[in-house]
Image (cartoon, rainbow, N blue to C red; front, top):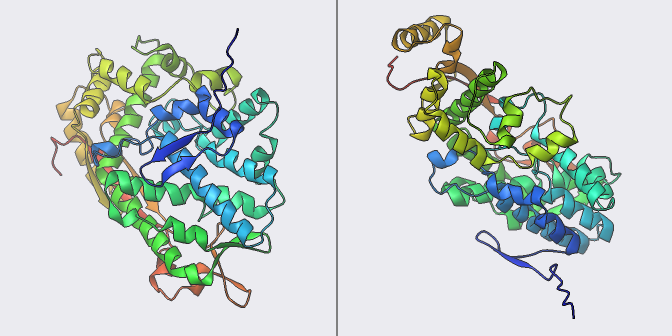
Length: 413
């Protein structure tokens, strides 16, 4: 007698943010169980932010599951208010939000700027979805259409990607919880309860305006306090430079310790033009552990640049970073570079690995890109920035740019 077990049984996950989360159906369960998705357990949600906030060790897996939970609540609310969402569209929303971040590389954004070029995580997410669609007999067709914004119901896409989507509602609350930065603890329950649809667009009912204002302000504070925290920014820039140096050495034929997955990306140039099915399969096996284990070995490499940079990251001897509103002048930059040249055995070409400058920007609310509409009791919509009686909301719609310079801490400006 052969005992056949149904592994796709009813599943409940216990989440520290929302409590019990129910997996809605067998297809969602199977997608979660797939190795492509399980990989997200090994991708940090906040990159190297744990070097600043020790509790920030949660993964992309946590975030994606949380987004599905919020999407379930959004669907229930909108249906209760008479908005038509078919069962097929509902499932497409769950699939699209579950897989929206599946294309993130190791340490989230670092790979986009170093060993893989000219292709972002959104494009890779779409490649994963298309590959899974073939494997699951085209059951993801509608989800892909929603994800790409090709569905006639615009509000479905806005639930996935907009200035008030389920992605942002989860990551702000979740990252606030794990980092301990209370300013990001938004009221996602209230925001979802205030959702509605007007003329095929997602809107917020007028009585929810204060919750939206808090959400915008919370997002601004989280960016400066957490996502763009200067120490976390220095750590990520250092990681990018380590990977860039590794790539440079690899393409010159220098032997570097790395497992087969990481070696594939180090020893050949990968960009949007040659990111094919084979590359996708190998990318799906690459995670934070592969990169971190390689960097630990690189601390002993004979190349002084990669060994020095790797030791700085592993031992948390991070570069000093100065953030300011004005651009750094050439005199200031050249002064730092000269001090590095005097201290380290590097050429002028290699100095960029130790002294690097650039800028970061934070725009809490974008007036032009899919702005948040407030639905009045009279049935008219108005932009949040105009409807709000908070004068600073218009100010928050302007990008704030800060310029940085990084250099080893032993130097003093």
